Length: 600
Image 1 (tube, rainbow, N blue to C red):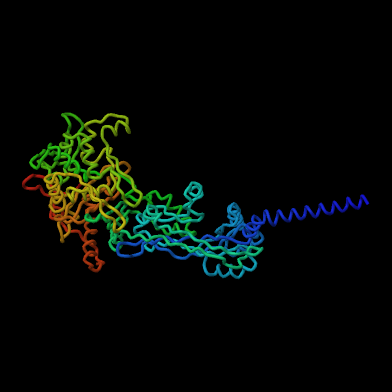
Image 2 (image 1 turned 90 degrees about the vertical axis):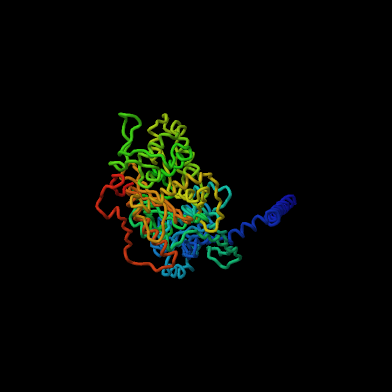
């Protein structure tokens, strides 16, 4: 009887434990296991949002999007026994698949891309094999397309996949794995605007990871479109005119601040960063000794040479150490004191008696050596900054600012005192001074507007925010007259740029540099009366600003006039006007005895 009672108690206890276990599983932990079961049968597949398009000022697409088909797997559902067949279809090694799936195991229900941009043949083979595959997906992705290739590449930029490091540092959770983000140019500068809002699919799968139905969908939201200020008709023509020259050309509308043209050469095709088969081309681009990915107009600084004489002239006029009647005698060199090292003029035979107008026209170094000697470096630096050199600008793309030296700068950076010889070099745009092409174009725009600093921008429709710079009207008038003669005089260093349909102002520069021939510069504005556009032309190691950049700007201005007047493009080679001083044998001028030829 006792044993029967014990056995009954034991049976009751076992049933009690079973009931308690079922209660715990179904009642207490029921919601938890329900969520687990839902998680095992439901997958959330992210959908990447298309980026906004980038247009030129006339609505021409510079950066668009196109569909691309990717083969992906869900690591948690993928059967490793399918690897050999999948590798054969995708024409990749089994090891590549294993490595990619292994990296994706950390987030087992997020798709891992095995092949991007597959063609229709591979898609068909995957679809046919799908009944035997678990966790294999074909995903449609929106990828970037740059229809103009190398043209305007530095300005438009390119996109790339978000990196592991960027995801780890993304405290605001802005990015998802595989997101495309801007890496350069407008794509980078306006990335937050161009990137859309990602969506996703909630799908149900069976025990083998095969999709059975779509439960819900959150649609993607396309990024905002951006319209740039550049005119692609003119942009492409200027790219063509630049040819193999390494440098930059820019044109800015003075009223609105719109950058109408922004060329940097050599360039690159941003499409190679989209095409997964272009790995060798990407590697070659990174190793190219000419650095084609560098925007020479925004991301590099150089000695400006004689273009900077505009700054020295305005500083000297403002201080009152020179005026329209001040003259110096140029015999081809200058000494600070008898017997000291000579500072040479670019024209070794000397310009003879030179006033400020003639000094600008013929780019006489000796005049500016004398003017610079009467200035403090802080005075030159202050005028430089007033004209925008070395000052940051609120543009939409990454850029650097130039170096404007003075006594404190040299003490802190070079750990040496400032010498008068430093000021002499400073006065003609050499020495420690460095500028970017954008800064020099903005500087010339300030001279054109006389009392306002233009606000350059690359996006159309931005409200111009000009800053007052308080230049003396009479001083600017003297400088403008000299800059007009640079182009329009038969003795001017910029006469190769002359065009028949208007008179305009400019200043050439030939800047000595290390590691090769001198850099060539030409900057100015047009027309002379009521200026509308400022421009810059820079050629690395171009030897002569007047010759190299002058001839380029001549063709650029002819193209500008043709396009602005909607004239058909002529296929004939553009010939520069031939000023008398350059086509006749070199002869002494009857009034001054100076031989005439283009140099600086």
